[in-house]
Structures are given as C-alpha cells and as structure tokens.
Image 1 (cartoon, helix red, strand yellow):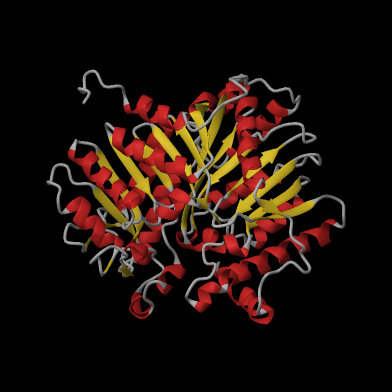
Image 2 (cartoon, helix red, strand yellow):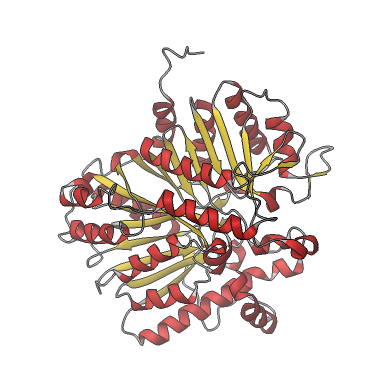
Length: 510
C-alpha cells in the first residue's frame, strides 16, 4: 500500500490507465495541413458559444477509447484510484456478473476511504422488478441492490448519495395505471457521464456486462478539473430534484422539496430555470471570443456541455445542434451521423438536408440491435421498425438531393455484437482533412431524446490535427464492421405490413 503522502494523484493514476488504451502514431503534431481547418473550427465555435459555456481542454488530455473492455478498465481504475469524488450518471447499473458486482463493491470501498460517491439513475428503471440470475437471488430491483450494497453498510458520515430521477410526465391516475417497464416510455434519465476527480468520461454506455464486453459504444475521456466540476455540478443539480434512495430501499423526498409527481408544474418550471442558469452563456463571464482570437484551437479543444430535457421545456441541446448543422455550408465537407436507434426528428432531418455536407449515416443492423430476438414479441419487432424508419429516412433524403450530393447508409454487422454508438463527426474541406468537431454523449437524435428523456452530450471543437486523426481512427474502426444495404430489397423484417404499421404508430415514441 502507498501512503497518502507519497501516493500519486488520482489524475495521474487513472490517466495512465486510460492513455495506455490508445497508441498515438501521429505524435503530438497539432498544426493542420488543411488550410481551412482553423477557420472552420473557429466558425463553429462561434456558433456554439451562443448556446453553451465552453471549457478549454488541451488535446493531449483527451483520449478516445475504442473497445468496451477499455471502457470497463477505465471505470474500474477510476473508482479504485479516486481520492476525492466519484460521480456517475447512467440509466442503470448491472448487479449480477463479476464485473458488475465488482464495480458496486469498488464504489462501496471508495466511500469507506472517504471519497464522495454520488450516483444518478432513473427511478422507474431502478425500481423495475427483475429476476436475478445469481444463485438464490430471486426477483429484486437495482435500487434494492444499491441500497443493500452501498447504503445499508455505510455510516452516516461516509454514505454514498444515490439520486433517482423521476419524469414529471408520469403523474396522477397515469402513474397508478401505467407500470414499469411501460411507464419508462414516458421518459427516463438517459444521461451518461462519469467523473473521477478531474477525469470525465462521456459516453452513451450504461453500466452492465454487455457494455463492458460486446455492445459497442463511444467513450471519450477528458482530464480537466473545470470540465469535471461542470459535469459533476450538473449531475448534482439534477440530483437535487430527484428522489433519494434510502438504506431500506425506499425513496426519500427530493432535497429541494419539489416533488415531480405531486407538483409536476412547479418541478418543471424550477428545474428548467436552474438548468438555464447553470448551462447557458452569460456575456459577463464568457471568454470564448478571447480564446478564439488566439491560437488556442491549434492545441486545445473547446468542449461545450449540452443538455436536453424536453418534458420541462429545456431544449439547449436541440437548439445548439440545429445551429451547428445550419453552419455547415461547405459542399466538399462531410457529416457522419451515428445512432444505434436511428429515428431523426423532422426538425433535424430538415436541418441536415439544408447543409451542403455529404451525409453518412451509421446505425445498427437488426441483428446488432439490443432488442433483436427478444422473448417479448413486441420488443422483438423493434429492430425491424428502426430499420424501416432508417430506410425511409435515407430514401427521402436521396430523393430530395436528386443526385446532387451523396447520402449514404451503413449498417453495423459484427457477429455476437450489438451497436449502441451515438454522435456526429464533422470533416471540412475536400475529404483530405480529419474531423474538426464531434458530438458525443447519450442522445439518439430521435423523438425520445428531444421530448421525453434527460440527455447530455458534449460538442468538441478543435483545429488540432492530432485529435482530428484520432477521431478519424475512431470512426474508421466503427466503419470496419459496416455494410451498405440495399434500401429497396435489403430489409430483414418478415412481417413487412406489421413493421410498416408499427413504424407509423410508434415513430414519435422512439
């Protein structure tokens, strides 16, 4: 054991573990060979600063992980080596396998050694009754497992904080009639962000076995105390409006006293106001313009945290993303869009059509969809409904373009694997450049993300060639497992009439 006095900081320990997951053949060269690269990054950053407060992060302190196993090792080392805080926001956490239990045990150990441990999960998903696979585990809930493993064994001074967000849309008679898992259709906490002292991991991945082994997602790590404070503060803000998990497994009231079920209107108004104050730019404190005037973007990235909670009327992410797309006016540029559940809102579809960029969509094939071969017949249909929606989207776009520009679709095919990646990559110029911007986080760019769920992503903008090369490497690694389908005859659904009807009825719920 290493004494506290001589121990290296968590930042160095966790960062060494993250950095080992990535080799950097391009070295640290951050000056671009593409003449419009810096100008493009500056223009996009000026657009984004109208919607969000950025954090400048040196590009050497950004690491892109490519595999689920590296994601798990990053999480595990982050919890083990944390000295001050661990903040996790996720839809759910697993409780059955060795890795899942190991992560929960590590959180308990971190709390016992004085680390502030805070979790934000969805209340409906966490209290859904599930059958355990372990010996004698029976039926229980994620909330009960966390209460027994983290809270019941902790003292009052070192007890972790587990907050359970509840949508204000499930209220009154509706709450008494609609039960989990169907109640989750109305909205969940879908935000995925993981903080270990000054290390931030942005992802779309939840915390269970498949996300640690064979469900492909994105994982971008930032070493930045300012960004860590911003993300942890946001999770804490939502936590103030969330129920508190008690050691007995029950729920205590939200700390701020506004109940989402009993007082949904007050809850929505107050939370929306607090999100605006916490996230949106104010002229007196914004220093982005000064940063853009220098050479900052050549070896730094500007990271813009974006949040969406449409059910309370807060649409920062949607508005910022649309403005970003509206700024893409170079006909030789390329926009890559990924979602495991691709179902663009009409607003995003129109905005993408108005760009001049080549469009490249990446999504899961039905076999790589998380609902493929579900024992529930209605859920088993979901992969084919998404495929139908995606094919219709791309065919509409191709028809409107009339051959004037390329619109491509790629489906992820990898035996035994599922595809869950979400995000955008924007590459300016004639295709000789690497991306200058990416969006990474939890939104799927569909109606659930826009109107129902709590979502968060970050927009990362930089002219650094080294970071752009790594983003290209990330995108290329995903492309290796994709195929371009035949849009007219390539669908895999067996009951096309039922799929077609379901896609029309369910489009705005997906």
